Image 1 (cartoon, one colour):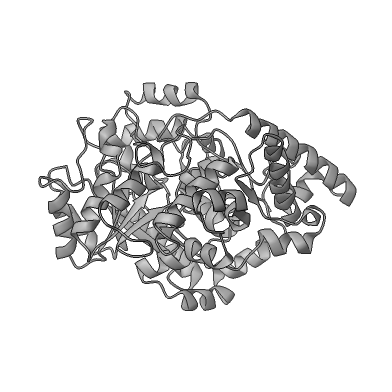
Image 2 (cartoon, rainbow, N blue to C red):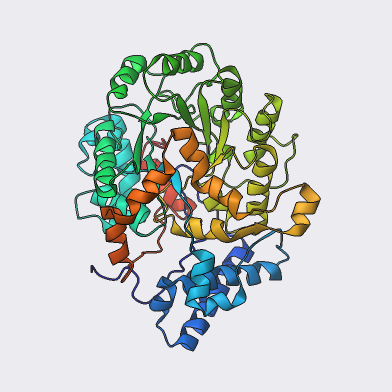
Amino acid sequence: MSRDLDPEGTRLPITVDSTSNGEHFPVPLTRDQVHANAHAHERVSEHSKRLGWSRRQFLKSSTGAAATLLAFNEAHAQFGKTGGYFDIPGDAALDVELAQATVGGNEFIFDVQNHVVDPSAGWRDSVNGRRWQVVLETAFDQVAKCTPGTLDCYGSSQFIKDVFMDSDTSASVVSALWGPPDGNPTPIDYAVEVRELVDALGGGRRGLVHGGVSPNLPGAFDYMESLVQYGIAGWKLYPQWGENGFGYYMDDEETGIPFIEKVRELDAPKIICAHRGIPLPFLAYEYSHPRDIASAASMYSDVSFLCYHSGFEPGIAEGPYNPESDEGVNRLVKAHQDYGFQRNEGNLYAELGSAWNACMGSPEQAAHLIGKLLRYFGEDRICWGSDTIWYGSPQDQIQAFRTFQISEEFQETYGYPAITPEIKAKIFGLNGARVYGLDVDAIRQAAVNDSVGQFKANYLNDPNPGFESHGPKTRREFLSFLKENNGRPG
């Protein structure tokens, strides 16, 4: 076993901090969140002493996660934040079996938004590549784990540890990053290498890749044709991105519609995933709005459209749906309604990457985020995504969602449903598996004896999770790398 990543037990297993995924300014913690973290540390110290364990030993166990989430409940209740809570019996903080029965689970978890970087860094030989290099070397403290002079801590080994060893994830999509093919830190060749490594270890279709396209660049359609040979599982867009700072709309006749028509023409899955929301800094804001993905989906019923981030905007507090509010997830819900989509029907899906991570530390925002998506999109049209590896392992996101519940008060007031185990199973993976055509039973069966499963079984005898998040945590850190990057996000 390598060195312990947190021998003194200084980090909680459920991370609530100001970390950004590198695409937006960090959002400072609220007073109640600061208090919740402090209260959780106090509870961890108390419980570990009662059990006669070290803090690290306690935190690595299922009781550590249960105790942390229970402490969050206590702290937020003190501030009157009761719209959502983590449904965990109090004794789970001291009972390993009870804790495992609560924070553990056997859902099929299909993460449709993961990221990985080619550590060989051949992509640095262009202007766009050098911009990305600055991001990776200055914006994320994960770089401290890299072998000096390399970016290996963003590569396949770290990806497999974070996603498959330190979390309950069953299958994963390596999703493309923004920018043109030259200088993109996730070139298709490397993404395919990672997919093949995951599948070789997993004995089945555990790994998928996106074909990333910037249709507003010359030669984009020829590039799309070349991507088909790689067996891509779908297409990834960043409509806000453009060489001159201006993007395009997915339903415009100059760029968006021709792209969709090309997707329909090619012999590849008719799945389009688009970054909508989380406005990229110093690019024209209007092109981050999710209206266009609903419009495009209404025109092409034979194509599945996944709205990555669900239109979420960091720093905008999620509340109940208000059609007059042109902010955050409300924008996606309004577009969904305006273009005639019905609950649990149609080809438009909401994806939770970064949105859930940002809201899970604020129980009322979390309740509104999940509640309004369930009320309007429905439990069959929401997909799980974590935006890993930017935040470290997604296990804390999984455990938080696995135990999360909307209060009866919010259910009655806003018409939100209770989040049943069946609903969670659909969101965690069954919906995404249906969209991507995965054989859930076959993957589950293969996972029992495949190399990933065997490695994980051995690893869990002495796990070494870092409980770290890796992005910029202050406005100063974020501005620093933007300055080095000529004011561009990539």
